[in-house]
Length: 78
Image: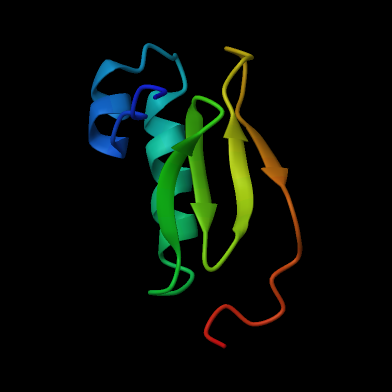
């Protein structure tokens, strides 16, 4: 059985990234979109979903933050 991914709290506590304050700000903005948005670790990065994943941060670069949008969410509260 594969190891369980870390929780968001565990991941962020150990994250060594120069943009960590901006990453936390981005997370808060995305989570504030709707109470239906949740966050999990996917591909070793914070990822966001409603019924499906729609965005994943890309933290490979230390210069900025990438945000991969997986699909357009027409109505977050539907």
